[in-house]
Length: 106
Image (cartoon, rainbow, N blue to C red; front, top):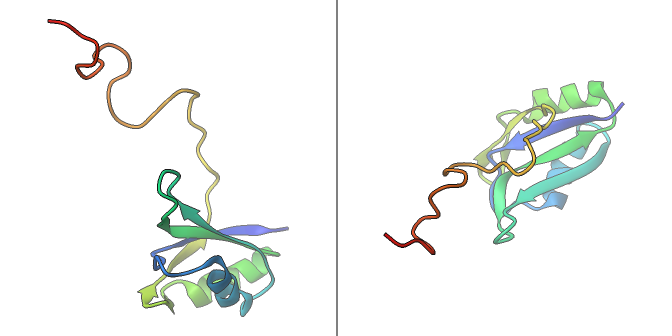
């Protein structure tokens, strides 16, 4: 069964190929993804690597957690399932009511 790993503290210069090559030394990589900002397309400094088995994933965690890649010491651990957020929710701010001064008269 595939096991997904979280990889943090990545250099903004690291590519998905770099990530795949680094982890391939510890087992079969089925997928490597870097997370990017939706608005700018710039890297966010973390990504995910999917290993083909839990044994390979454990070997990769032991070898790569704290290892240097592109001048940065990586943080590697098993990825947790993504938390579901209620539809229509957003971070910060107030919902409804005050529209920040747009279209309001006092």
